[in-house]
Image (cartoon, rainbow, N blue to C red; front, side):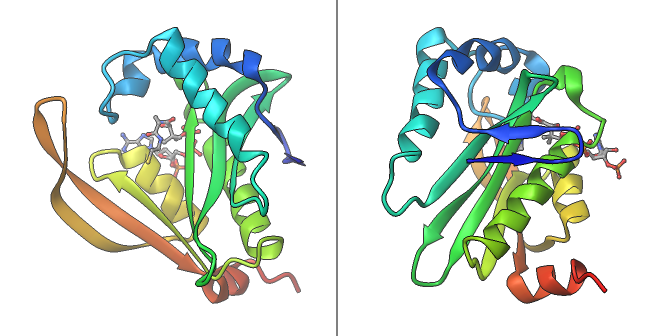
Length: 181
Ligand SMILES: CC(C)(COP(=O)(O)OP(=O)(O)OC[C@H]1O[C@@H](n2cnc3c(N)ncnc32)[C@H](O)[C@@H]1OP(=O)(O)O)[C@@H](O)C(=O)NCCC(=O)NCCS
């Protein structure tokens, strides 16, 4: 599958994408809020391989697409169903730091959210981010998600505790916010 937004093409991952992913996942700006301190070729090949594996699920529950700008892979964005019975999914995204601050993450995630609510019939979408990851929290707020839980000292990595925030949006809230006249 693929989704075109105003400036991006969201498309399925292919194995050779590991090179572009490895380049940005090695950037300290990217690594700041992850448990990883560096990424090997093997790590990133496995990471991309996991997304490719999801393409063959039946029924498919996880959609993590490569975000490309002018044919260059600049990140990824996806919705992953966590509970088929309750129609609940989580959303996640990441971008090459050289492309931050242009609204691309919001643009990609907005399209994935629409796909989730319209095509996958989702009822609720959640996301979790480190509380200090203000850019990610802002993306979620721009998408209309609301912070429902703040968990102090929820994650331990890089030798310290990190607070996390959980955001959520229901299908009703999403429909109300995206109703076209
Ligand atoms: C989170 C991430 C995807 C955002 O990508 P992006 O394309 O720069 O996001 P957007 O441009 O769509 O929106 C970013 C918003 O955060 C704001 N922002 C950025 N840095 C900020 C900071 N330090 N404090 C407060 N707001 C900040 C921007 O101003 C913008 O808001 P605005 O449109 O109201 O001005 C990117 O920073 C990233 O890839 N980080 C590493 C991976 C990651 O953290 N993924 C999410 C895991 S939960």
